[in-house]
Image (cartoon, rainbow over all chains, first blue to last red):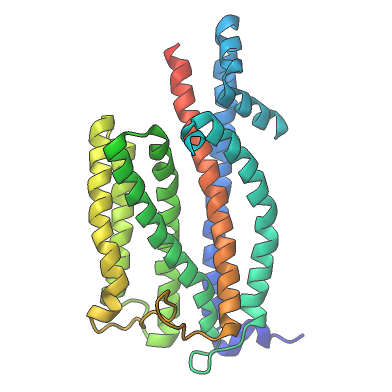
Length: 75
Length: 235
């Protein structure tokens, strides 16, 4: 196997560590943001369901709340 | 145009855009990485280290543009008190900070084989580091100042001062003698980068912009849901 493509004349360590660092940071930010979003959606629905039925129905009619319910049920 | 000021319309639109950007992100990243790491040529002086440019330069551009956008939205919010605008800059700031750190770290890694040092206190590097502190101060001022008016004033002040730093970053390589090279790509001058290197650079810039769009939309939804939860608790 030709390792030269990975070694890059001895500069591979710099190139791969730069790309690796960027990749790890981006993955971490993505996973953390997604987790927070899902948790907030879940908590929002939970808190809305704990309200008296009349108020829950009012919230369900709101466009943003409706969108959160749809998005959460999809995932 | 007015419908873009309607939070429920923007929230619904953010959901649709998020699905689209998520779908196109991975293929663009893969193509961009193949071009950057394997297909693009070596530089005749720097050799393979030039490949670091394909993430360092777009990251620096994104961090600078994010701060410019944050400043614009802060001033807009300071003048017209638009709630939606607050959500935009709160969603953008952590992304800008992330890419600022990526630009500094990858620049430092690139510096070692080309300049023989990881860090130098030259004008470009120092002003980029100062930008990082502006980002941190900005994030702290909306996270830890509970009074809304004070928070908006602090954010606006930091963002306006940060704008001055953006001008310093841009012209630092012309005003002072620096280790950092002058810009090779300009809107007003002819680019000095060869076409074979512009393709991976453009692809990686596009891929990172798609990534920024995905994170921004998720963060925008997070901030909107936080406001809605506060509304529920008041009931």
